[in-house]
Structures are given as structure tokens and as C-alpha cells.
Image (cartoon, rainbow, N blue to C red; front, side, top):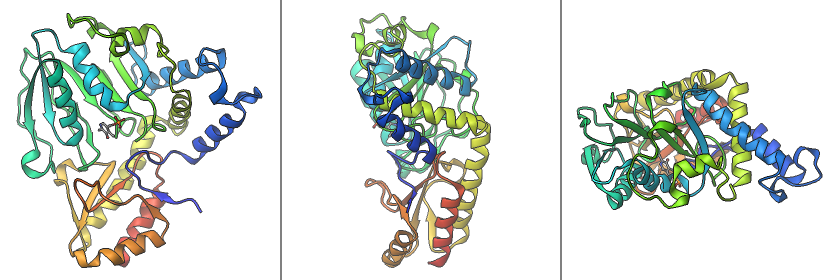
Length: 352
Ligand SMILES: *Cc1c(COP(=O)(O)O)cnc(C)c1O
């Protein structure tokens, strides 16, 4: 039986996508060859890469607007370094919003590259909210934020207006809600939360911001080289890119981001409604900053843990355990998780 998969990442993918990907591993496009045994420079795979890059810009409404989409390796974690390498000018300054573990990771790497200022942090309250009253200095080279904090379950609902370049780690809520993506100069996302399997990272960047840092950038870390080589400076992770392409096509076929967002809103609404009305549960994140992707909560009475755990396991639910740094529970309700799975979880919560 297929489990109700609430894993935080790697995480659920649409069942159709998994079937198509599995078929392509056995026989890609009826070629008599596996997807994972052909040259990445063969025409059928070049088509896959082109299609994936095109779908990204199309879904984001960024076609013909001076943006490039590339698929890289090294995870979102390598973007923590690539962003300052490419955008932090020699003698310049980078600014960051510290909203949790991933944001802190990005800040750490930026400090290796140059002057890095943290404008605000929610560390004082265990990262359970999004800081709002801060000003982005006009002389900063860029402002970096994390749209959705996967571990703590908070999400930026309204992005600050930035007088400088706007960079965002959207790893765990990419393609989950409509945004004016043209307000961002660089967006990155590891595939394995909301877009595909582990092994590739999407970067969407405005071309005109590149090449201005004044530093020498090693080739693999240079966005301009990666763009010029169309994501094939080195061998791309073919399976991860192919499966991401299938997921992007699935989003498009569902009616695009707007249609997915409607379902996501409904899933979040019914789950948070249960947390708020059921005295057995306490939500972790500040209400106005609650994530619509990672729903974090605790038991009011820890002695009910064993019973709750056995109830959800018996219902075929998987991956509900909170991150090791926070504890409690985390239900990741990414794009591919059906509404029905959330209903199963809510029913289990009612039984406690
Ligand atoms: C998972 C995650 C990362 C790290 O991704 P890797 O691909 O493992 O490097 C970074 N940022 C956010 C918001 C994440 O959820």
C-alpha cells in the first residue's frame, strides 16, 4: 500500500511522475536504452534539459524577461557559497535575514567570502517567527532571505521591498504559491523538497546582475559559465533533472502554480484548523508566519506520544517526526501530497 508520505525531504513526488521516471530508467523514449546510460549530450537528453529550463521560466512568468534557469549540483548548500562568490563585490557588503538553520548556513558561507551583515534574526525565540521590522541598507550588494523555513515551519508571507538585489532560498516552497518572481534577482532551490529527487539544484537568475563582483570565480562556481554551457559545464545529474522536468510538466498540467496553490491553501487550512481546535496539540510557529509547506506542532501532553505515534503509523502515515533540532512533529505537505493524506492525518489527530 502506498504510504501517506509527510517526509520533509527527500519527499513525496506525484505518483505519475514516479511511474514515468521508473519507465524511463528501463527504456527511455522507446530507444532501447535507459535514461541513465545515455550521453548527456545526446539529442534526447539535451531536449530534456532545455524543456526543464523552459518550464521553470514559463511557470514563474519569467520568459523573455532576462532570466536564466540552470540546474546545478552541490545542493542548496553550495548556493550558500555561490551566491556571495558571484554577487558580493570585492569590498562590498552582503545582508541576510536569519530565520533558521538554513539561513544561518547561508550566512556562514557568505562570511568566508566577504563582509556579511545579519539585519534581523528570530533566534531569540527558537526561530518560531519571521522578523519584520528591519531595514535593508541601500549600499548592500544584495539581501538574502529564506522564503520557507523547512525545519521550524515558518514562511515569509510578504517579502520586504529591497533597495538592492533580492536573493531567495526557496528550496522548500518553490512552485507552491504565486509570487511576483520578477521582484527577485536570484532564486535557488534544492530539488528534493518540492520539485524532484535529490541531486540537482535549480538556480533562476537575472542575467544582468552577473559579472560585476570584481572577483575571479572558479569555473564550477561561476553562474555565467554555467549559463553559457546551458547547465552542462560538467555532466549534469540526468535522473534528477529528468524527474524534475516531469514534475514541472505535472504542475503545468494541473493548471500551473495558481491551481496548485489553491490545493495547498486548503491542505494547510484544514491541518492548522485541527491544531488550533484540538487541545491535544500546540502549533510551534507564530500564527501569522505559519508555513503552508511544513506544519510543526507538539503534543500538549507528552504522555500521549506513544498512543499518537501508533495511531498515525497504523493509518499508513510516514515521516511525521520533527527535525532532530526541534523535536515534536512536522507534517510536510508539499505540492505532491494529496489533500486526502492530510484528511487521514486530521482524522488520526481527532482520534487521540
Ligand atoms: C533542505 C534545505 C536546504 C539544504 O538543501 P541541500 O540540497 O541538502 O543542500 C537549504 N535550504 C532550505 C530552505 C532547505 O529546506
